[in-house]
Image (tube, rainbow, N blue to C red; front, side, top):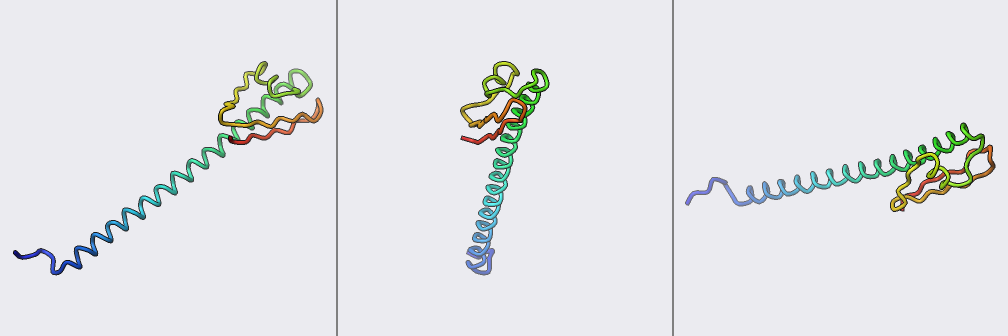
Length: 106
């Protein structure tokens, strides 16, 4: 029987090249997905931190003082924090100075 390829080396080279292309594309997609997930995580942290700051500023504008705790903002200003995903460090300094606010992913 006559082969359509001149030798078996051509077939092996084409298979290896095809596998390498598939592997390289898979690695590129994995890096892209990982980078997007990291960017989303960072953006979520910033959004939550900015929301806490806005709530604290709203409290200061309405009441003339920054709240003593994050719980006050949750109860009175509709702030929601997913405590399963985030740890919030809310440290009041004085009633007229913006508290130290940091959000950390669990």
